[in-house]
Structure formats: C-alpha cells, structure tokens
Length: 281
Ligand code: AMP
Ligand code: MN
Ligand code: MN
Ligand code: MN
Image (tube, rainbow, N blue to C red; front, top):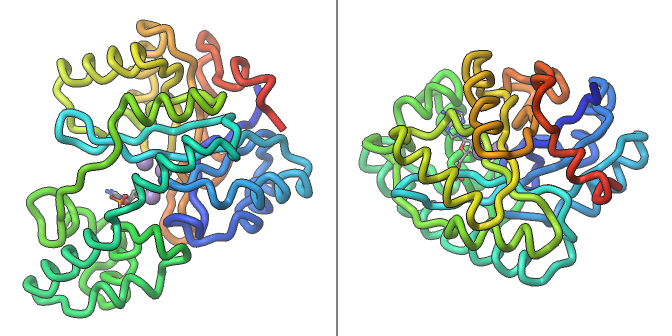
C-alpha cells in the first residue's frame, strides 16, 4: 500500500518545523504521498508543494479547519483543493480572526491562576502572527516549568473547566465543508475519536457532514488506538466515506507518531487518494 501521510503541521500554524524540514523528514521516513494541513491556514501550500517535488514525493494541498458543532470543536481536514480559491482563502481568514483576542483572554486567566506573562511567552513560539494557538501557550507552560510536557498542560490547563480555557466560536460545519468542496477538494472528519460526543451527537455529525458534501473520515491517525481505527473503519463503511491516514505530526519533541510511521488503512476501505487521483500533484 502507498505510504500516504495526509495530516501534519508546520511553523505556519502550530508545528515546530518549516514546510521544507517537514518534507525532508517525511521523505526520509518513506512517505510517498504527503499533505501539509496547517490549522485554518493555507499560507504554506506553495512551499510545501515545492519541497515535496524536491524530495520526490507526490503532494495534495491541505488544511485543517476549526469548526464548532454541538458546542464542541471539531476539525475538518481539506485535501486536494485549489489553494488559489478566493472563497476558501476568505473563509479561512475569517476563521483565524479572533485568535488574538482569545489569546489575550487565555493569558488573563492564566495570570489569575498564578502564571503571568503567558501572552508574550506564547508569542515567542508563534511563527504566524495570525495563528496563535493553545499549542503555543502549552510550549510556554512547559518552558516555565508549570508542566512537564504539553500533554500535562492539556490535562491541567487550556481545556474546558481548567484555567486558560476560553470558549470560542469557530466556522460552521456546512461552511467549512462547502469552502473545501467549492475549491475542488475533499472534506474529511479529522481524528473522530478525540471528540467527546455522545453516540447521538456523533451520528448527527456524520449525517450532517455527509449531507453538506463531506466525503471522508480519518481512520488511521496518530491519536487513534487500534480499536478506535477499527471502529471508524466501520463508520466509514456505514456512511460511505473514503478513509484517510495522517500522523498529525507537530514536533519531534512533542509528537509520539512520526511522519509516515502509522498502521496501514484496513484493506476493505477506499483510501481518500483514490477519489483524489486527479488532484495529486
Ligand atoms: P487551538 O486551535 O488554539 O484550540 O489549539 C488546538 C491545538 O492544541 C491542537 O491542534 C493540538 O495541536 C493541541 N492540543 C489540543 N489538545 C491537546 C492534547 N490533549 N494534547 C496535546 N495537544 C493538544
Ligand atoms: Mn495543532
Ligand atoms: Mn486536529
Ligand atoms: Mn492536526
């Protein structure tokens, strides 16, 4: 089977490697088809495409859009779109808007919890001023010694009910799916096991996603156990969705799943790259 890794992050969002360094690492790890999927951002696509060519890898354009569904944040990966599409670019720009103010509020909360200077501290890790994220705060909290590693940060801070969590309204599911599809790409539900949905809510997510034109689901990803991958393989078949595979790699120091180092997709599923064959560059 093709070694495809269709989910990772660069310094253009909350990864620590540049698109070029990611491409080199992916290629070294045996990746044959690659996509850079920065959060709410496509500013790294031209560089990623060029770097993929230099490394002899095939490339699909990518992004990961933050969506609010049933009061929770859901991530929709888009693959194979035209990265010059103006509706998609404008939708992503609006989705990014508000991250700055949210970060200021996160910082105020952390100061009240005894951790001052978090906004300035997080900014040191930000590669793209429009894309300050919780990951950058997490790196600062590790730097100060408040937590040992970023996973401890997300257990103690920045998540619902913990200091530094600021509820935020992201894009609508329908809009995110339509921006991607309208630009000729495929919308994919990212890491479905990570959401805290009830079975009813999850059924609603997949049903509405499909109704809006969504076509894929990440079955094999860095944050899925073997059991979770098996479970979402069934969901893919139930909803007639293609299956995607991606590490969600962010950093050599933080990510436990390296680029390309993932289990294969179960053979009975249709890989997303079959439906995207004419979008591969
Ligand atoms: P934001 O888009 O600012 O809400 O930040 C979301 C990002 O935080 C995700 O894309 C991950 O990179 C990171 N993140 C969220 N939850 C966790 C977690 N439990 N462990 C590690 N990283 C996390
Ligand atoms: Mn991230
Ligand atoms: Mn995600
Ligand atoms: Mn991701």
